[in-house]
Each structure stands twice: as structure tokens, then as C-alpha cells.
Image (cartoon, rainbow, N blue to C red):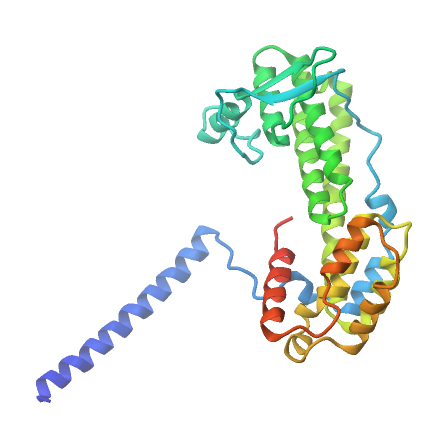
Length: 329
């Protein structure tokens, strides 16, 4: 190789290295100035020890936390009120955009979805439609109805969305419960910001109090879910979780989450991922399998691994459980 060619290669490598360094520095500066947060390196449950998680869980009133909310605010739609999609309208899935300015694209999207939903009273004898719009589409319809000068049907739409939310809150899956709580929270926020929609100043004040209580409840449900996962990541805490899961006085969603932590919590425990289930965990799972469970919980237990799965199966279960644990609630 000619000396000149060798020098060109060396200088080119140095130049490429310099460009890479500049790009890395520029990316760090951009992240810092843009407000984009880097992803966490560990699951939230990794910062809580199993023993501390059990202590914290024992301090919660789980029955009250998952009980259907009553006062200070309750809505009931008029008799036979339904929501349905217009036959020629788009059936769009939308997040909660009611707080967006009306002239923004988010506000226009929100109102377009609401305009595609019909809120009406169903005549006697006419069967209910097979499928109805999702809860937030009904909330968007409430906004369109209110701005069209029809506050009565707007309140009915909000009440129907709350009814949808309560159906989710009665499910045996914590993720479904949280989805219902989020939907009910969005409905309360609409009522808390608009006295006409709420039905007066006193009703608006009650909605504001309910919104504060709902925000606190959502935080506590998230915390409980994280603590259960943290406890399930340690085989030493599994017998306590298994005992609590057998308590029929606890809400189904909490018992379901505890069974999942007992059966799949090993994917958050590096030694068990590497070498297989701890004998304590395996014994707890076998004891749970001898009990008569409600159908929903029996299905959850059936999904739990009762032996030492193969390496490929451990990888599949690990990815599945971790993905569900990292879902944003």
C-alpha cells in the first residue's frame, strides 16, 4: 500500500469518528432541549423490594379501592337512550381531546368523531343495536350536542359513557378496570369544566370533587398493580401473595393480578429466568391449582406455568409479561 493511500485511510477514519462524536453530542443536546425523556432502564417494580411491596399492600383497603364509586356524583341516562354510529360516518378510535382548542386539528378531530355518533331515545320494542360507539366517541358526541344547543342529550351522552366505564370497572382484569376508570375520569373532567353540561353550578362542584377523588383512586390502583408485580418478582413473597389471592372477599381484579404475579412473576427474577422456577413458587402455584376458582380466575391460573418451561417458552412468557407490565396506565 502506498504511504499516501495509508494516510488517506487513517485521516478518513479519524474524520468519520469525529462526525459520529458530533452526532452523539448533537443528539444529547436535542433530547435535553426538546423535553423528551429517555426510556427507563428498568421496570418501575425493580425499585421496590418484595418485602416493602408486601408491607405497602397490606396498608391498602383493596375492597374500598375497587368498589364501585357512589357519591358525590352519579349520572343516569334517560330511559332507552342509546348511542350509535351514523351509517355513513367514519368509525374512528380517538383519545380524549375535549380540552383541545376548538380550532385546532385535535379539536376538529374530536368534533368530527362526535358528529359521527347519534344520541337518541330508542322507541319501545325496538332492540338495542348490536354494537355501540366506544366511550370516548360518546363523550365527543356530548360535546357536539352541547355546542348544538342540546344540553339534555349531551348529559345523556356523558351518562352513557359513564355506564360504559362502569362495565369495564367490573371486569376481572386490572387493565380493563383502569381503562374504565380513565373513561369515567374523562367524563368527570368534562362535567367539572362546564356547568351547563353538568346541569348547574352545584352539580359542577360535585363533579369537581369527584374528579379529585378519581385522580387519587387512579394513582392508588396504579401503585397497587406495581406493588403486586414487585412482590411477585421474589419467590420469597409468593406464598403471601398466593394466600391473599385465595381471599374471596377481595375484588376479582386484584386476585387476578396476584395470580398472575405468582404464576409469571419469575420473568422479573433473573435467577428464575435463567435456571427455572424456584421451588417455593412452583409449590405455591400447585397449591393454587387445587382450589375451586371463579371462571375468570380459573382461566388466569390455567395460563400460569405449572412446571419448568423450555428456554424458548420462558423467553416468550418473559416478553409477554414484561410487555403487559410496561403498558401505560
